[in-house]
Image (cartoon, rainbow, N blue to C red; front, top):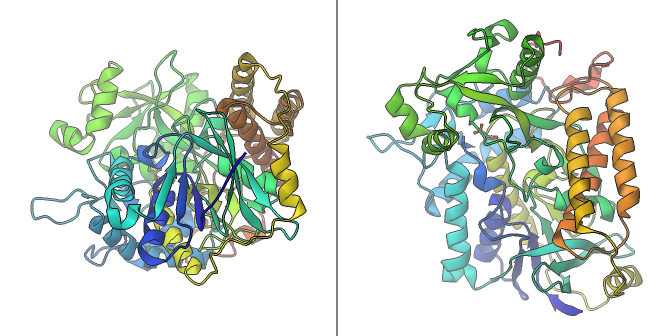
Length: 546
Ligand code: SIN
């Protein structure tokens, strides 16, 4: 097996990973350089598909302020967010946005060249920056990839491994992370890579569900690595189901219809032509995501349908085409002219509020292991993420992590202890893998189905136990400790860990709050509102009884 060493390994090439790589390269002298490992192409990630935008609490936006943004975030998160984290991220948004602009992200502007802000659910003011209309994630990712690849002052410190999976964390007997085992999908070779700092930036877990807005890469890989390594995990019961994913008959894919379409005036409508959100919540179509999603769920049940519609004809045609060019063309491909037709939509798994428990600078419970972005849980989002806070979190936490690392000794140690050697030996054992490719497809389908059916928008103890039993059967047939021989097998392994983790967390929290809605909910916990001092009214008092 090949061995190598770097000063920092970053796993994942979404906005969090790329931005951290750039910041590291800009600001720290690294004796052994940075390794950026991605299981796909450098430019592929969940971030790339973010449409609506990124929160920017900017001084020029006179109607906005940090305290307003903090209040909105706490309220959407049902008081489970960490107030200090929320404040910190909000206060630093202006620096993060400034950085992106300097790196070449062209946020949309008006004819006076002023930045334009859009609105999304549960935001009290327009504060969301967007680029390319509805291609914000793509525009940010593109600018960062360009810098990592082609800006010589940055790229000279960064090595890139594409189509390479981090399949194990090397954790020594003192519970310190010492590197990773990587698996190259093309050559099928393993490599031991040592580093005094390993950063997980692997993104989300949407692929554990049958219906998701996430790309196929979102299989919770970093989360599974952290679970296997024994890191502390938090809040995994909180899965955000986006209310409006394009829902076409006989097509399981779910293209995102950005919340900002509702921000610009579109309204949800049921099969009887009624704008039904008025019946569910005073904020109507722009209530927080968990509320709109449960309202749609209830409305679908009530009317016996598997979708509702979005009336975007309320937005002037030219405005729609300019603001949402990708949504416009994707709908057209599906035979829907959004300027005339209602868009068929239903909720789909979109974002994981939980993850590897971290501080705001990415520290996990394992020394020298860090996590940033969707894989991490800083407690910014609490029980329900406020739209467009996530890209901002990727940047601010990445920046803070790099600051922290600038005070660390980033020299590789020469001493490799027994625990690490045992892990390495496992991957050099050449044991025979008897798993069948066809079984992998079957496992994936079963995992996605049971998670959607039993651990979805509404769950209860019975459904959760059913899902747990299904996943345990798959885990036993798969054999989690046996080495894998393909990328797909590793993804199945990771999905099993992620599914179990979500189910077990959902079983533990017996009370409905935010995105975790249990139809057998017991009374609200007093603790759930301990951080919501800015929240005037009881949050999330939805009339939905799904
Ligand atoms: C959207 O555009 O609706 C998604 C934005 C987000 O998830 O923050």
